[in-house]
Image (tube, rainbow, N blue to C red; front, side):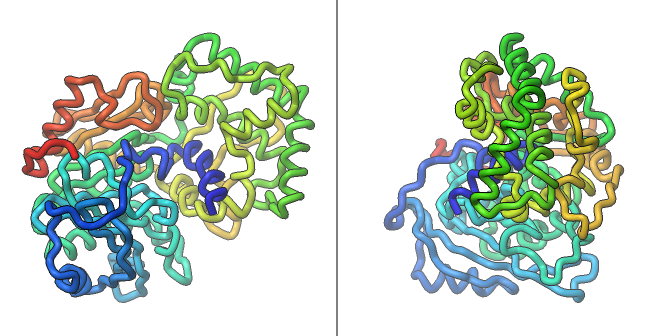
Length: 459
């Protein structure tokens, strides 16, 4: 399963939706006994109190960082919050318990919890020295209704999951609540606040794109024409042209032979050649999402590079095997959301004129099986954007300077209150409060502690 996680990375990067990579500033967790500062009543008291929450099931207790207890939980949610009697499913959760009197941080990576370490603490959790409940998004991982009605996967239903969970757990954790997430998780954090603005005292959204018009991707095109040095951009362009020109058959052949040897297929996307064209088109975006330094391009191979070296570098950046059916299946829900509400980027490619064979290859239909209907809702994201600018409060947005996700960022407006947008210098999609300039870092940290009503030092 480690390979599956590795292969999923480029798909999530490409969709500006990275679950584990975008998670800001993960502290290394050490397992061990409870710290004296932790609130640890008799084991049965805590476990029984959580289990007593209606709809909550304690699955098991996990090893935890010092000062915490960790539980795997499952919470029963309605498939349709508008009609709660029409079926339900269990939503997978991971709880880090510090103390019932400490703040609680609601964290979502926007995906499933399969690859998230139960001991993981998000940056806001460490800053406020709080508890943390990590939420698996509906239709991901184990949190998928059977049978699957795809029409019930939308931002409002997911926000309803968070709202209902918060109300349930506030019977146990009565101190302030904060919400946070990175990339797709950051987007979900904002969407929850739009529909339930008073559930939490404040929210931190990292590297969250704000695609208000899915028909217009010129902002991303402009960003990619300016980011980095001219030498880096020229090297990427030359590589794209050779991958879809003189070296195309060679590179597609290597991918096809690898897949055949592993027993993998490309039925969803169509062929190894289609995968190659898709990943070459999106190479500049994926490349810069991973680069901290704007001039860090010395490892880009020349068009004349040895075939093994060229393929290895390209696969290392884009993870070509991730586009096989086996590795696409776990993230089908992501592409469904992109193709119905969130929107996505189709990059312009005038420098590849005459080399493209597959029109529309960047559309979300490419990733989603034909058996699942896709109908885009163009009003969903403009509504979120208006709310942030006209009514959004207690919000922190953090972006990386070199990250294409900031080409279309969330912005505050006249109606925003106690809301800020920060830019971390020399940073990629892995933006965090800790990477901000000192003055911005102090302000963001102070806001977070104010919302949580704590004055403790960073953990």
